[in-house]
Image (tube, rainbow, N blue to C red):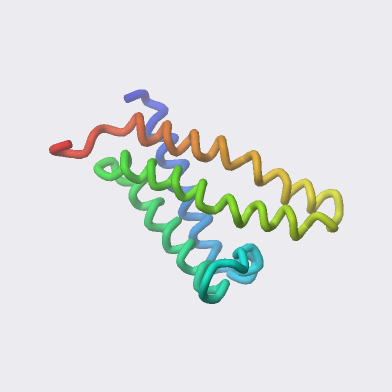
Length: 129
């Protein structure tokens, strides 16, 4: 394992934890991104996704669960893509700066997925695995 791996894993864990906490600090921001086709209320999905990000952050932070945590992070980044697409569509009539933010989030998903997979691959196998 390279000396950069723990730093990268810590950075990914902090990124996920901050994102997860923000779902509870400013939930209305996320409520608007929940696709209407999902059952239940947008707030429920905001809270569930916040909890998922916090749980995945913890899994990435702990060396023992880092391998599976990295895979879970990659899956999570793929799972939130529909919300980013919804944001881009909903913000298509906003200012150029706001559109740039909304559209810019879309291609960022790929580097996030690759980062999470890199962290997972670099992690030591789980004991007994």
